[in-house]
Length: 443
Image (cartoon, rainbow, N blue to C red):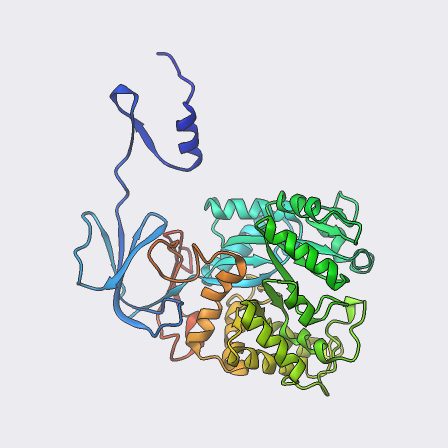
């Protein structure tokens, strides 16, 4: 029998993961679709901010949500596998909007253990805020294809002024084998840099965003943000990009501003050139409701810029390193986050330290609790921050963040009501990622 080379169409379909069979005449037909899964009689918190919906059915076909409706109001397709979740609650898969994966494990096995633990803790996607793109590209591909049990990964390429690369010891590990400051995912930029070329090379690493980090003047920050958007990338930055102050970061068109405590520098008499003082703001004397800071928040609201507050990491900093930040940083950051939320700014949930398998749950659960306890969010709003808004921050809103038809079937099944108590978001019975079920304790 002759062995024929695959046709171009067959090759494309294989790459897309579509299973086909040959039929007489050379036509191509798809196999019968796999059976549908119905999660029935569940109380649904869909991530949109809408009140919980009781006695719902979530229909999953393959890796997508096919329909959501009141249980018993529609016939189920033939061969549907039914899971009766009476007494259970479903929320969208959680998204940690601020992680640093590369360097967090010693080897591939360590990364897989860490990511599986995060997935079993309900985290089905992450927004990585810069590291070694070679590691991140591998993890993003493996997670996206479900070759490993892991959250989906979206990551950025970092750009900063040359002085940053001379000051920060972390960049050497993130660009090992490449001259410091020259890696396309970890690049030193100046006014002489060609923004179009630098952004094109950053995009070539698989990054979906730029992280505009430190020691950048406002004009260069604006040029890079504009070029990122032209190239189809998001622009992420700290709330202050020394010496560029928050109002200038917002005016540049940045999509997400990280670390609410760094908004303090808007009302400082002087913003230093050196980003290393970023946590040493005058939190004792500058009020969170200073008119200059409120004006920044209103500008963020008007432009749709997202605030990534990272409350929990500052609480940890004050407890573990009381001399490592300005006095009162955690309380100040929580207060300005509350104001941002009250003024209609979109707020996500990110940790800047996701935790490790030695912990009981990923730190995203602690960040959600901080939003409720310290920033005035309701549990429903905290869930939206960790799902819908986090998906927006990561550029994943088309496929993640809410339990809606057409989106990926990323779901967390809980045994207790998370609206009554945000701590109940930890009562995880099962996690679905891309329609596949994972159960804590060996699922």
